[in-house]
Image (tube, rainbow, N blue to C red; front, side, top):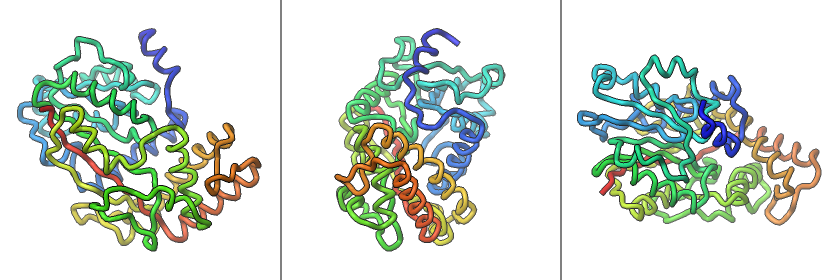
Length: 324
């Protein structure tokens, strides 16, 4: 590993340590995402791979998308013509370097908000980035998208999928896709378990300056950065028993993810709450700072119980955008 890569790792914003259980969680989360969007492979059918030569997975994490892409039949049959790269600010999650070398995948450390090396400018036909919702501020997004444009060839494609850090329920469903935005205060200002869950998830995003509502505003941000959005769809991610009734965009069942979807949130939310509690910024409800760990634990237990009893819904969206 280069010294640059080690330096990048010290600035990592990963919330959960890079241990085996976390890698397994991310793999299951990726499989569920594909089920939500109805994808049978790493890319939606609207992306033409026939002329793709250089591909980069940005903020690659465990490289689950990288490896899934490499395993696509049309990619495997053209491996002598398709060069695959993966980068992340923290390479701890990456598979063993010898395995990646054997796969012919080039990896490197990279902060998406910092300029890429000049050798990568105008190099890629396709880049992929996913779930940066609790990683980037608005300024960070503008820098990242500008960097994406620089490293893509003219006419190159960026594939992105993001979600909004807001829980909904069947009784309090997401706003219609044409509503223009979420009423964030309404999501947190209340006494139900879902309001408290949003005080943690939405609150964490707001406290850190992250963008809440990417499924709505990312299109405009892409266009501002010089992209034309050619394909985009919203998908609703079910949590818990809602998986029994909600379907993927292709009509496929999400029932197999009922237990995992709850366990996923059981792991994520305590990390977010603990981070805010330590900084004395955990507010439940808004304006009321939680100062006792016992109170925080009671809130998390109430959220966990409510989520298992009622289930929840999260809003996601993917974007296929071409560099103009």
